[in-house]
Image (cartoon, rainbow, N blue to C red; front, side, top):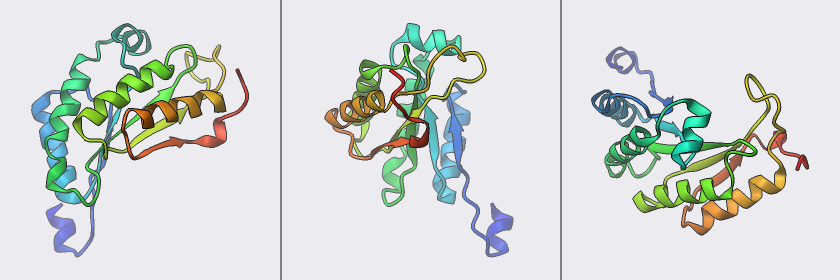
Length: 164
């Protein structure tokens, strides 16, 4: 970053992570994003531990602890979001309840934290599932807003359809 600054360039450090990392390393990474004007994005797969484990093979406990840890720094740069979250709307796994609980957790920290709901496309090991339906995405969007989040959006809307 020093070289970029010396050269008059802007270098923003942005991360997208599942949040399952050593908390000391997380703090270093968050501080780099804070200093550079970047962002730290957490991919929150599910709220319910059994669903999270079914999708990832591991516990989500550290994810939520690290999310809270990263959010300790958001007031140091209020004009541009430092931390944000996203959730992939996997049909049959991530329903309105999952999104509601994730949104409640995020809003309890700061209702201004941006939250993106992402449409699922059947690839890799989940090819037997349909893409996310438009109705499912809209119900999840409404649930997140009802929990008090102010900056919620649906990403990759072109994948949405009337699948179920």
